[in-house]
Image 1 (cartoon, rainbow, N blue to C red):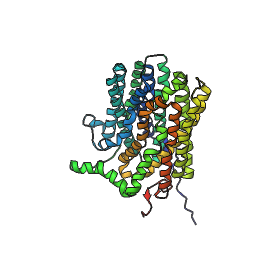
Image 2 (cartoon, one colour):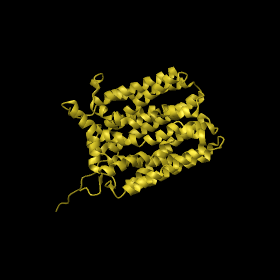
Image 3 (tube, rainbow, N blue to C red):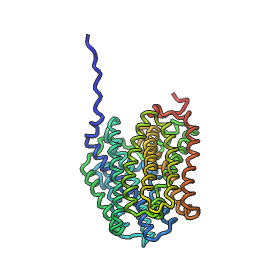
Length: 436
């Protein structure tokens, strides 16, 4: 009598040995490169150039372009660039946006804030190019490997992205202590050559793309259907509530991403090198630890309740910044605050990605995920746009308190949605109650 032997599961590490996994490392680096250079790091340059806090936070809100990328995601998804046709649709868009980011950073260095109008325009251009680069990278990742390998691709992408944040955050600040800001931005632009070479050496996803017979069909399939599908699956009332929840649940986190934190650190007596070491290097790795803990929590307790805990912890962590008011350059206190805040935000980041991924229909992955990831940043970016004026009017402490209590509506929406939206693992195909 023979006994059937269950097939051996492939090693989880095998996916990391695939060339596409390490291609995603370089593409993640490319995505992360412009993010701080049009927001947080830029704020230090503007502050040292003598701009008012209200002007700094408005200019550093150019990153709001990332909140509207869903508007042109269908274009990136379906239009093949004639100029880079030999590279293919995905790599063509990647190369175009990489060149635009690099050229825009060089132009910002050449203009400087002395010619403020042109400088702001270039900053917005870099932000738009960076947001479009994000769309192209997400689409490339989804198409280059099967679902079983996506975990490795996301991991290597995240590693590349975080290293880019260290380069454009920590390294840029240290360089700025020893060189002029225009030279720093030229150096950051030169670093983009690394992922450009990786793109030229990468392979294009082997995807057969069905071309619409006319513009009306193309618009319907590329623009209308991804959004119509969402409301067909969730219904009108629940669907709108889900979108409202996505808009609100990371507002506390996003409200501190823009231009307010850099000037806050400087105003509390910290040098750029101290900020770089603690916030931009140590803090990045603490955030990675928080993301790992979040992954374990999702695996153990599912998406929904992990997300609720993450939302509350993420908002409460903003209160830690109250400890830095009047700290007078106390690096130990800065380390404590960064530890708690980045751990909570890393935890929230993983839970947020898991939740958004569970809502997506894989037929419209690129456009729907672009919509969700855009909405999640929008309210915080709007608040960040006015953060300078708020702080000038009431001070830092009330602003940090405001960013904490703003999470209350998101918690209320979560509790209303919980019995109405099921995520199936909670991870998996999403549906509303009453669906089969």
